[in-house]
Length: 196
Image 1 (tube, one colour):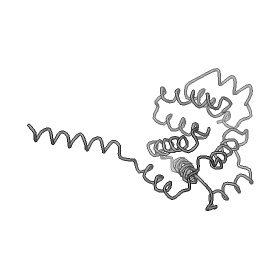
Image 2: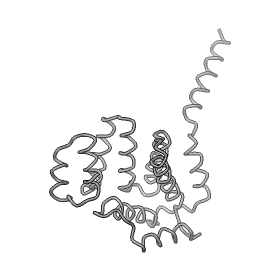
Image 3: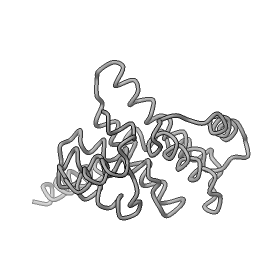
Image 4: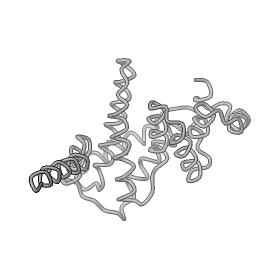
């Protein structure tokens, strides 16, 4: 009898450790994080992330300003920059999405792991999530066709960023929310997303 208890407890222990073991994304970016200066009072990374969102996703014309590209390059090159691991993970996410589109091969699990990591770490550093992470998470959740989680996350995003055109658009597109369709067609009819 004692043998079985020991075997069962070893089995349960191994299951618990297997479930709590970090995925490869967490391991990779935690390694990068360990070599990064983290400063919860330095908002440069958060502000730059928001600026990217404003220029590429919120703006009528999806295009970076030259000054923003220079600011991004300077942030990434400057050894004194803080919280750069967040930006590295964000750029990696965008690279995965771009390559997936080019190769017509979607990698939903990888996208989910990266965006979940970004969400968790932005909350850790800044105690808030930038709009772009809400948008990316909504796009990722849609790949899994989980309408309940999708609706919850769109609503949370719109509560925090009520003027987000992409979140309103996805609410209409993925959840058929007619209120947002009317709102988008009335107020944002020139936005690039409307023509997709």
